[in-house]
Image (tube, rainbow, N blue to C red):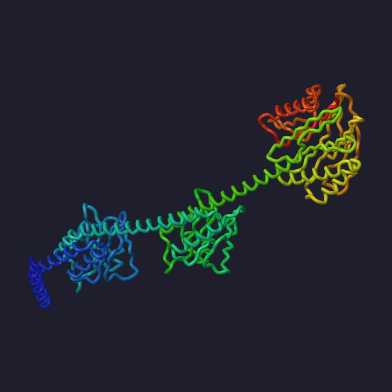
Length: 584
């Protein structure tokens, strides 16, 4: 049918209607014209909303109804209002219709359709399923929906089914494309911000970058980043847009902090009702995202409201969560870098301490007429606290020193250096008891309260074959006589550097040919086997006796071998130092 002919029929129909007449043939022609208009209109667009509006307007104009709505299927038995004319505001947009009719039918009272003032529903079906519902209100002047009107509706529904389905598919494709475009933009942003985050090893700079990025991406009014402290509370690290009075004290409570971190990435309005949600909403935050990787959390990111009060959708929450994961990785990298630098610093300190310690030991054993010497100091860790020395005195005498400084590492090395320098300066200048009193006073006034030294000091006179000694809280040395007897050198006083005043005592021993003196630290006597039992004094004397006949070095080696066999796989628990002296 050509367009001029359609126009002539339409003119004739309008004239009959003005005269109050509507011949059946012209009525059928009107319906055909409406269907043709509908088909032409629907075929000229792919927009789902335009298709629905066009279909609704055409049918309402043809049937002369004042209200109507097109409901599109959404889920099983649910339909959402997508196009409406004349329906009162506030009516439900999503209605349930468990069993939609297959042909146009009256709307039952009490339904959501009836509440909206609609009286007739017509299904729009495609491939055996209902894809939409066309609901209409009463006709003008109370005219009923007759068989002809219902037939027209069925024809219209059949013509509109395919375009409506295509329009909905097109609309869904547009939505997916928009979503993909947003995802691509977010990925580019995450990629760019990821490069910047990984390029920085400063935790403060990383946190500032995260806060600035999230505010710029969402155009948010404010943002804040909190660090998780060791006590389980959250400490404000970075903030933008907050007023000074908004201190967020609730997050300083471990319970509130755990609640915020356990909620996962979510809108603040979706949090369980309580003080936490009230506090965040009062501070105008709309999004809360834990900074975490897996189950390990290190902080919390809060994002303020968006322009116009728009809520954060699933895509925005996913983006914020991805940004938080990148921040967690960058912060963890910065933390590991800081730990590595700290370890390197400690290693340097230990190296310096070890160099200090090694410089204090004698480079070679002195030669003493009528005696042979042997010495060994072995650190259990990188730096030990044991020390021994031989100091030449006037008249061919020799000062013998062995000490154990409390503590380990650099502080112990520094204290050991002080003891070494003091003994080098004081040895032989006064009686051993008087000299140790001066050394005690110096250490007491110049070291920490908890620092002290156990020390054995003796002055060997080779001509008289005697040793005058003072034992300041040290392991009593072992004296093995050539005739098989043995004794311990216990005379002395308390440790050095712990008390302000000390009054040590001195004693003297003489040596006969073959007598052996062994001075050890507690790393020998307190060495433990895998079961936790100590080596003890009872094992020291037999170990020394096994090598004493072969000389000072043999006795030392025999004791070291017995200690190593005792500890076995357990290894050392303290520094081990041994000094042996044998009369020849």
